[in-house]
Image (cartoon, rainbow, N blue to C red; front, side, top):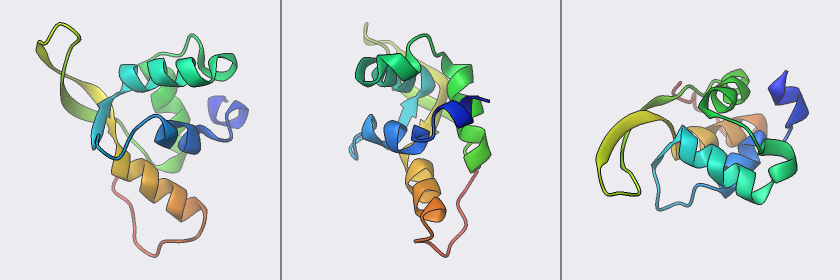
Length: 100
């Protein structure tokens, strides 16, 4: 199971999504993960990310963004707030339920 091989997936994803980005395409996240931890994430695609986040109640959503060529596009992605909430829940620092 992917989540078992990557016990820090939540922290790693949060590390590659700055506070200024509320929603990020999955493909952008896996690219950033591969840049910072190639031994763990090289070769990952959007589906691997979705599978790794699922045990934490995080699902991908439609996210509007702009390609490198400046064209707008709607793709699957993740809300940063879901990652923050999942970390807080895992650490026992939240009383509220997270969306998912």
